[in-house]
Image (cartoon, rainbow, N blue to C red):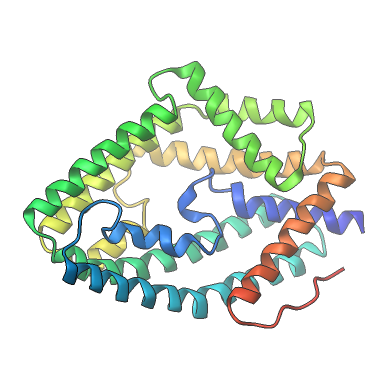
Length: 287
């Protein structure tokens, strides 16, 4: 029983942290609202007709997400439990991360398809407003993560990652916290590289919007973040994902029985929530 709890805990953690804590890929029902907000509402004041179009598109997107994606999330967690029954290693953790990435890309493509017609109808003044809001958001992003101060940046990143792990495992041991701190320090450069890539992708998106918001191109930009990356970021991201996969395995291997039970409860809770939200009958979790 303890072995199965350990295996499930490892993959449960991988579902949340194996992509580096990127909020865009967190498994949560509110992903629907988060993605669709790129359509405009947080960045520009919409005219009445645009507001109605936004409302209709948001409702349609949410309905699709409930009917299509939530059952897929529940099925993914069921497969996680099945695979975990025979044990887990770095390969299984990488598999879970890859599956989650697939689901995000599917979500992003659908969001882009709904967003593009609305974005294409923005006026020049509205597009200018979006660009100003993006610049303000970037300044806030950099300030909150202390990107101009290496020591504070690393401390903040370590705190955030420890919180991710503790959300799933409960209180961490000193050894587990130290492992996380060393990992963050070793991969500090990726934070600045990702910030520059964030701005690059925003600039690319604004060019597309000014050109009419062609849906396929916007979908590719949202769903395929690797396209157009600087070689330095591509290499750093590969090292980061490999190292994070190993970190997950090592930390869970050191997990106490209480930590394993905590992670298993979280995993089962997510599965039940997805089933209920999708309108499916919740099933009893596997022992």
